Image (cartoon, rainbow, N blue to C red):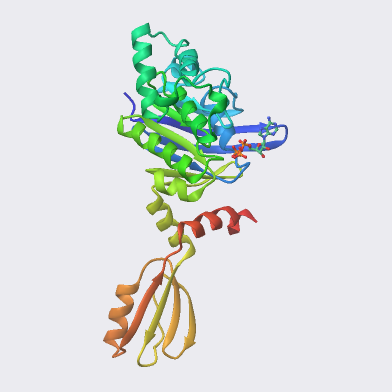
Length: 309
Ligand SMILES: Nc1ncnc2c1ncn2[C@@H]1O[C@H](COP(=O)(O)OP(=O)(O)OP(=O)(O)O)[C@@H](O)[C@H]1O
């Protein structure tokens, strides 16, 4: 049994001459929530559709739950749940009937089917309105019904394309709760979003895609650290006495604001070294701060960063 729920290797897809996905490689581990973050048009949906076998990629390899997508698409689909971007429900059918319709695609006995539908309607908070036509539902209620639909076959892996898109904060919160519960149940969740805060809040690991390419992948904390190593730590130091020249292999640049005030740009956090160095030269430190970029900065710079120009 593989410990990866998803393996995407060197995935490439063009529409005409436009490369929507360009050599994408990442993996999603079993049991984790993986947030696929990127601006509109970055290639998220194209990647997802390739993972589902709906789009045939130009190149690369996709393994889902240890199976090759190009060889076992049907077997794979039986074990995953999918929520498309802008999915629609049957407005003329009740919540119950909507789920029943999808439950009929899977080989479930009728008591098993009823049990599953009951559980899911309760889980997504639609039990009390199960006999209401879905067209009377709010956007958030519709989205929760769609999530229940994606869960109908008790999938091992959930693939959700922009699951909170267009929802108000309350609606988005409920959707996030359902996603967390799915993980608590042992399911793996892959979801896409262009909303940084939500990806940060929900994901165990994150992949950032920009113009068809993966810009970073890993736990948010690690991505921030990697970025800081690349972009530099900004260390501000203020002392009582004038500061002598500071030299360290991690320092990329020094800005002297005053004889006793410096901003040091470095590839690592050298505060400890700096404080020892200055103290050993009889300089009293008044303040020593390091500037950490917010994830917002990381994201923005990843998108509009130098190598993109
Ligand atoms: N069938 C198609 N024909 C031509 N171009 C396409 C097609 N589908 C997508 N594209 C283009 O490929 C790029 C990637 O689209 P994709 O839908 O994968 O991005 P996305 O990250 O999911 O964005 P969004 O969040 O806006 O859906 C976009 O520039 C889009 O215009």
